[in-house]
Length: 486
Image (cartoon, rainbow, N blue to C red; front, side, top):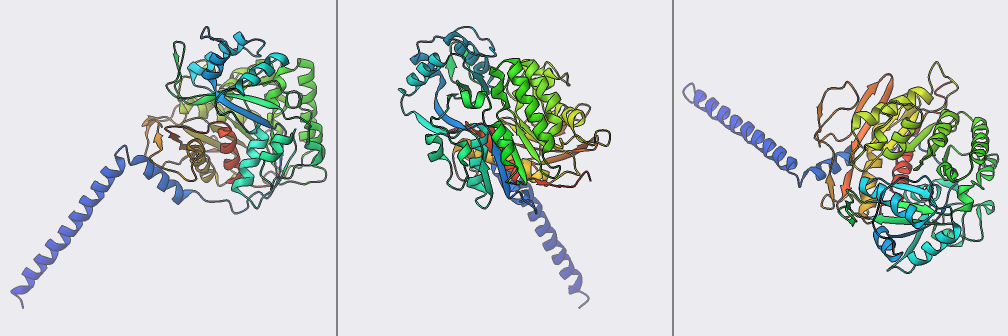
């Protein structure tokens, strides 16, 4: 007994050691495997599925408005060639009066790889451009306008939600909208407003410029939306329908109007937002604008009256430029992926300048959702919003799904373009990205932030309305605390 016991103990120790060694080797082999470039995307997708959850108290009754139209989507370069427009100078025109203006403004954003939208001021010329666009191969009309796109995404993904859409809805658009969306009679118009979507792909050439990413340039001549003809009906509608979330969009289209008209509409919107009950959050979705004075007025008159703001890198950096925020000239220098710390600095400035605080208890802004091609950041006042990590993760997940036009994330169709080394904000230490924890969270000056990378579609099939789907999804995964400032 005594002679065999030591031998038995030695065999047990050796067996356990071998088992532990095998487990460790297996672990390191696994880690090496998932860190391979072909496996990283799968690791992120798995992490999303484990960490993203719906809020305990979701939104159920929504009012969405006001810009809606049909989008005619065409290849941008092909259309310009069809119009006998040749490559030339690039310049950012605030408004478009000619084919030269179209070419120069398209080229300006094409070389930057930034989505943009500009109003055409000549109705006859725009009509001719649309006629030529309809002659291209496989032209298709789709749901367009931030309000209609956000409403459609929510209706399709959250079928139990009761959603009312107030905005100009013509016959084509009415047929395209999900049947569950309630479109009151005040929204019906006789003829659809058409927006022309000029898409391009990464690596596509226009003159001596190469598109760095897949995105689009939008132009339109739109009476109903550019004059916000439905804005009075939109706010009047809240008197009978009491939503638990209001989504407002289309202010950017007022840029094509005179300063007097713009200010009159903005003053009306400001006064109506003051009437919205404090327990009802209002989300404003911005879009591309070029008039510094108009953007500054939106910041001064509207931002403190809303609860949530959605915007991309062009809109965020130009807002900071127009309203004297941090990194004010950065909007002129963005090429490709915007610096994370600069974006989070600007989000923090927006929340501190126009947001709710003990010093400004009447201000309502408590949430900013930023989205770009490669990552999203949501900054919140933690007493007003919950489930923020899930909201930003759900937003980034839907970006790759929609761009690839698939039903669920597919690691073979997407790629990670998030930086390996980065700073979350100015003064922060340099960090290393960990694909097993793609949703990162931090607190700065009392505000909570969440960031998640986008898995970018390698061959995007559907870029139009991507920002609207992202914002809509992020909202539906967010939870608002109605009486946070009581």
